Amino acid sequence: MAQFHPTERTGFVMTLVVGKMIAAHPGPGADFDSALATCIEECLACFQACTSCADACTAEADIASMVKCIRTDLDCADTCAACAAVLSRRTDTDLTVTRTLVEACLASCVACAVECERHAAHHEHCRICAEVCRRCEQACRQLLAALPKVG
Image (cartoon, rainbow, N blue to C red):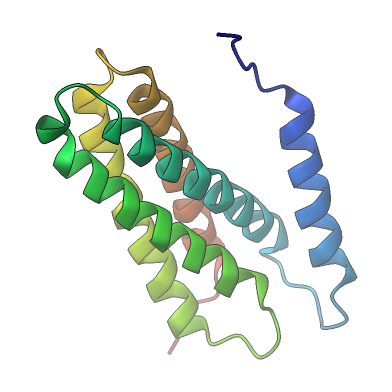
């Protein structure tokens, strides 16, 4: 079976698309646009990695030992997808909702990374997923630090 080796170009294209869409928005820009773009990119990458990891877990010989990993993968994938979607909508942003959703995404990424790290020594898909979850966790932390305080 041929090995797939993602290139830096793939990340570059995603960065280009997200950045262009943020810059093209007719509303006012924000001081946190860079952190926003990074968080959207990492959420989308995490959605894909977690979805793929859950699928790979179902193909493992001892699927019973992977049930919790599958569940945390799917929860994280759904949370990241929702977060990327909400963050991509910039008109009349409710910062309370945004902050709450990014915090939930961060918590889901931490839980998924911890679970995948338990399997990383035996399953490459879990090692990769844990890395992607940790990157998304960091992007969420950076966005939370950059968001204006509510209240």
